[in-house]
Amino acid sequence: MSEENEKLDRGSQPWRVMLESVTGASHSRKKLDNQDHGRYEQPKENSLPIILAISDGHGSAKSFRSDRGSRFAVETAIELLTGLVDQESDRHNISAVKDYVDDKLPQRIVSKWKEKVDDDLEKEDFTSKELDNLEKEEGIKVRQSLEDNKEDRKYLVYGATLLAVLVTEDYNLYLQLGDGDILTVDIWGKTTRPIVKDENLIANETYSLCMKDAWKYINNHFVRYTQESKRPMIIVSTDGYANSFDSEDKFIKIGKDYLDMIRQQTFDEVESQLKGFLEQTSQGGSGDDITFGLIKQIDIQDTGDGIKIVRQEQKEYKEKVQQIEDKLEYIVKKDDLKQFFDLFNKTIEAQSNQMEILVNNFSDLLQDLQKSFIELSESQSKKLEDIEKRLQNLTEQKSQKSNSTNNKKATKVTQTETIVTRRTKTKKNLDFLQKGLIATMVLVTISMCTNIATAIWLLPPKSSSSNNPEPKPSTTSTPKVLPSPKTTPLTSPNPLPSS
Image (tube, rainbow, N blue to C red; front, top):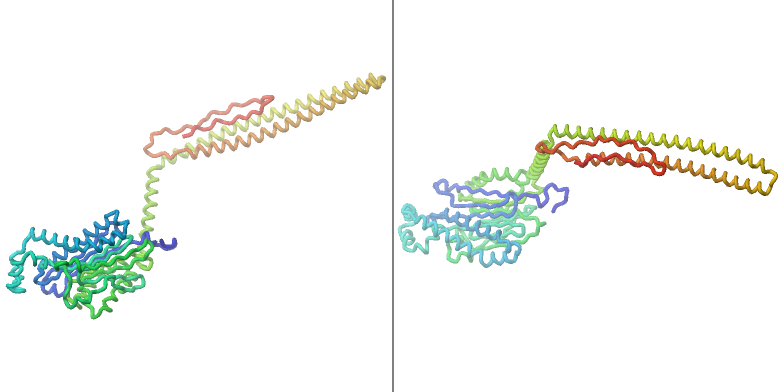
């Protein structure tokens, strides 16, 4: 995967394919049909796997059905390579895939192509018009030979080459039978041939599906890749393209040319111009049919496509946000919002009323306690004064008896100290009780705020289709609590019923 700041990571970089086939300039002048055929399969848009196959029908008088032969060749390659990808067990066993490609795939391609030719002849045998044209072009002997040796020569009538590419997450497979070109182009524009060009083929000679033991001449190149590997751009073309250039070097240069065009423009823009490029090449070159295919993974160096993809991602993001907003607008109507705020306000009002009642109750209770404390203090003071007076009288009456008087005085003094001590303790207890009441008020206030927040949090959004009745907030007031001589009243309001 790429760094986070890269707009296009490897997982999201789209795979694109362009394919075009044009009738050669010379064929157009002779009013001949295009003998080439091309097709690609990409089951999931902008993703792997991709299968691309093209074929060049021989187009000679002897191969008067080579346009069908090229179509059968492409169909055969697409079907077999699709079957190869669909095999779950082989997909995860790359060695087994390669063994199958080396040992069995070539034979399967040739045999399946021949089956399609046989089926076509069953449906439509050679017509008199086709045979007459063969005789006109090649002579009576060639016609007679075909009619006398139909089983041996019928495949020549459909003769065609084949080039195919399979690109998967794990590997690339290149197949070639006969002439034509497969090129790979790396990110720097370096262009190479994954399958070495056969130097034994000269002039217009080529290997063909119609040959005996044609499977022996099918070359393949199998390349494994990891998920992080950067794949090359792939170009596949029939020989009409390469034959339009003076040299191999000039033809190979098209790899970098197409790479630069895609980077400077966009993939779609290059694709829209492709047909014109090929027609001009054929007219100024070989005059032959040209079929051209290109496979590329769009990356951050493809400036035009990179900006295009980023804009598309932004558009998709905005669409998703709009969908969410529309969904919320559908679920939460204006009436629902009004009902929610009404309920919210009622809940706050009810809680405020209960809080006010609670504060008033505690205020009254505190006043009662203060009054009791004052009355108790005054009572104790009076008692203390009485005791002091009685002590003074007793002291005067028994002054003659010093020993007993001293003992009694000591006793009274002890009692007086005891009374003073009790008075001090009583005052401390009242102070503690007052502080406890104040702390209790604070705790109850916090509890009430928590209840309000909980009620709001648990309140579910009400959809327009809901039939649930609106929850009613409790309006029960907390009764006033009278003080108890031995316990501290801690009465909290009833919580609202949860939704």
